[in-house]
Length: 583
Image (tube, rainbow, N blue to C red; front, side):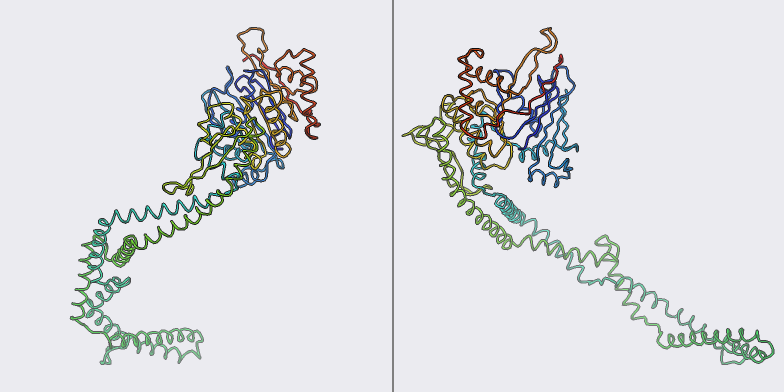
């Protein structure tokens, strides 16, 4: 089973209600206007239907609905992917509150959720069929969706391929439309790149130019400094002009000569010898520099011209000189991108490849629909024979479209011949409301047998039928209840008698005797004699009459003989009809 319980607080005319539900087929019955569909409305709101302040009971600040489920694997996986706590084992609790201003709040297993998340989760839990389902069967998208679901046809790859094709086509159209603009932009980039490539600025050239220019422009000063330093270290040709090296050597010799008397002189002499060695290295390096250093006015003039070119181009593009190499690379990249965009042949090839990929998938979908359509036609036709439309035929028609669409190459339409000899016509052209209701029920039962949602809800889908057809509907729902949880709001005794569990919805005045206190709706389990009474009422006679009650008991007995599962019909879990208070 899936739906375990449904709890309502201050919902329309329900002050407080807690309904525990079981597996199998459950019928909800009651007088006209008692609010039989309130539970269905509440369940739909709990699973993401549009909220409104009209659902709040008069005088209450808000209404609350909570629904507890046994989570099927698909729902459990969805919760894990969305980050919702797994809850207690496989239990799943959804809750929604709507206040007087129409503001809605929602929770999944106690964590805040959006209405869209409730709706997505609800599709995995409950499949609801209403009495106006036939209207959806006139909409192409709904009809196509039913066929695809019946045939287990996955159209997601086709939709993705369609989006890829459309994107490729839009890129091609944009490139064709923008050819003139792209041409002008390309000419501008070519000119800028050409002017900059004349300079051919290297990535590290600008700092190197500045360094070399600084050296050449100060070459004589650098030579003079090196010569002065060498003379200070080595001394001049004149013996009176002693340099640092001779003086250090003289000082080291003097200390070394006396260190046998004063040992402390040894360390000082060693330091002086080290300084002497370092000065010789400096002197050697400066001699090498002076050997290659020279003033070069021609090279300096060339560097001046090169620097001027850098500065002139940087001013033209309004950049710092060091930014020129990066700017050139950027323009070259933009030009390559424009060339790619302007390459219509490539874009055309991409669009054509995307179209062919979509077409291949579309043909596979068409073939799958071609196989599923006759199977669905036969299954619904068979169901029609049991629903008072003997000799009627149902046909799923596939018609090629004038142009391709996201869903494929063909349109899908439901055609119906309601009686022998009639030509199949579009469903919306069937005049009889009863025939439309029965056909919608046949399709709902046929397609629901293959559905994924563990709970099926039928809200007065048996409108416009009666007699033996009503009994057939009851047996159909009973069979569905063997594998799925089925809830059905019905006004037919034949349908209710086939249920494994039976709840009666009643509307009565509020707790106070004052008539102004309004009415409240209650839900109670119909067990044993109470169920006989309700079936008798639904038969239209005097519920207290022995004849009517005997007729009701016969209905229940016949339903019990139809399937072994019916022996467990009596519900051990009822609705706790809480004390109503004045609204």
